[in-house]
Image (cartoon, rainbow, N blue to C red; front, side, top):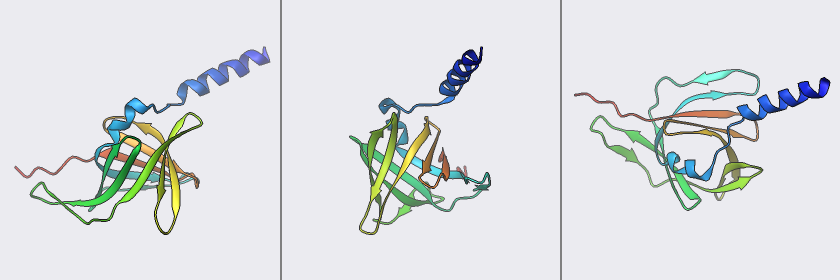
Length: 138
């Protein structure tokens, strides 16, 4: 009987785990704004207003993330700075690995669809993003 409980627990736990496949990666392309950050102690930081957003572009398992500022004219102000990353499949998940002259780090993609995505880093800090929708003044 105890083995049956373990089996049921395992099936429920594994059914709740969302795996990210390569076919979902094109959803990363576009403009994203941070929605909230969840910390390992259970606290959260909610972002209600964002003056900058992230533009992400991925091609052939390589990509970059760039900070941009939306304007009221529907355009974006940006600099030439970008964080380049490589997508690597590891233990059934897809991770974003960043490397620049000063450091290198990674984030595991834990959820991804057309309108939302989340990543978690090695410190177990989870970043939740939503698709950016421009402000329409018309």
